Length: 325
Image (cartoon, rainbow, N blue to C red; front, side):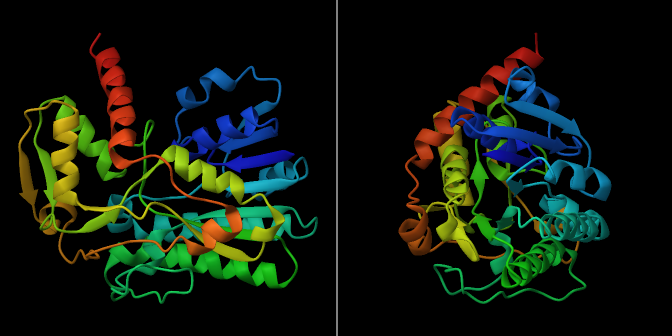
């Protein structure tokens, strides 16, 4: 197939591009490098079936031109990161909604299949676990910026299903805490990358809140495996949880990373107010029901948390050693 990947130079996107090429597809990558990194695709720049276009999904003319060349689009480009949601909710809301609207509107005339990367964040504070694809969304007050990303992604999903009802083949994937090599290691990225970087540098691992929050972390190889499975027509018009069902507390995660990286770093607790400012809210637990993904996509995660962390730690260890040369 001929496939467009928006955000293809990002953490998940670059892994997806690699796998699609390995499976024989022709891939067009669109990325403005606001989150992605050129080096993540450097080894693919001369690949005969890959082309990189530097640009934004907010550029309708460019998006239209890209879509005219493909059969399917994976829309991964997004404005994300907890720090972003708190500091600049307008950027988060407009960046996510406007980009997705462009993709859907311009894909519709040709009925180009759209696979949209959503998030487990859309379930919000719902405490009824595990989350299935029809679970309620429970958010805090609109004055609490923390919910801007979840709200934007929910609106994106509403648009996806509205276009699906009009005949556009659309699939929604809700990612649960993906981690692995190439993940951003700042407050704008994921906790796994932040913890690993601190552990390898001998710095304290800062656990925000009580540390008892439970999450299910998914190694990027499993995330990509579920993402590629969504190409099948049986996935059209549906949403799927893509994640792991093995949950750990954030403190347990920090302890495991310290052990696997052979670090002597201490763990310190830091309040949400210190990390993100006043009024921040979090959810106590997040766990997916994978029944639909298993039944229709044949998706089942295969990389254990320990296995995935070992691979990720080695990638960051090599990257940090190169930075110090």
